[in-house]
Image (cartoon, rainbow, N blue to C red; front, side, top):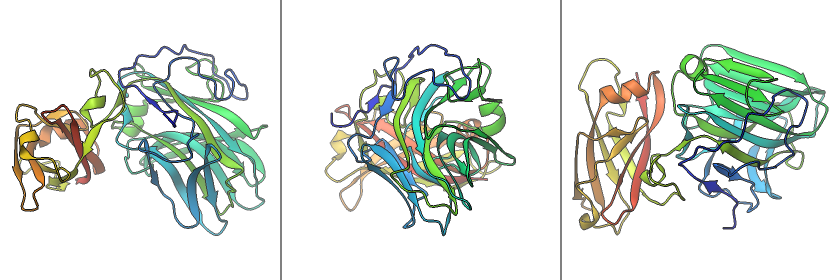
Length: 365
């Protein structure tokens, strides 16, 4: 493969619990200490299918160039977050996970502020109200490590001085105690810089967790040759996906699917009252005949991997194959516990074993 991306979904990678304490380097930059769950070193200089871009504009861009993920902004705009976010895969918070990345921020400004970071959010389109992030940057001329987390109501930010332009940062999670650890030394509780207790159940209040790689700017010019990320690595954890070929228990491997379009009715779901039935229709690409549909395979709705209560298929007037499914609203509400916009996925398999999936955004009130 041209790209050093490994996506194994059956994972129980033991990376070891290393001491954690800021301003040290327990593992060399880019070093892999065990078989990776997922990694991207950006050496192929193209985005590929692992990520999707969010938050960019003509004055705020993210590109894979020079075998790294580079960010660029002009000084006349504010950029909340922009970058990459996992495209139709996530980390399962029911198991421990560990991930790290190399960050470079070698610029400062007497007036603006800026940072480069990585983090976690349950918001599939990018961090807005619910997230935790760790990075480096500067506030004016103050070069700093930076941590920020937001539970939708209260935001918390912390800084500490940073002596080096390039560092490796670590995020790890203890699923038993529901604690997220942030550090630039290693994984786990020993010597951590920041610990966020009640991370999923208290702060975010919903799963799954999407990984994002990003930068932000407050009226600061970010030159791409001085602000970038490299060597992203998930060393331990379990990944989830709407695609059955990458669901836990299938043996892992590359994502191989038929990409469909999804429409959900209603698109605005009332949490209380009304019918318990959600109707979803998946449209598959041209060239897949009705004979390929497997009526014995029960489609699932995610988050939650909820089995369909009914499903059928038919050929539409444009000769495309449509799969009509019904799901329980109650089961989805048990998984998605907060209101707002959420990305849902419906997935299944065809007779020849190919996986199909489609996704769309719905609003829960």
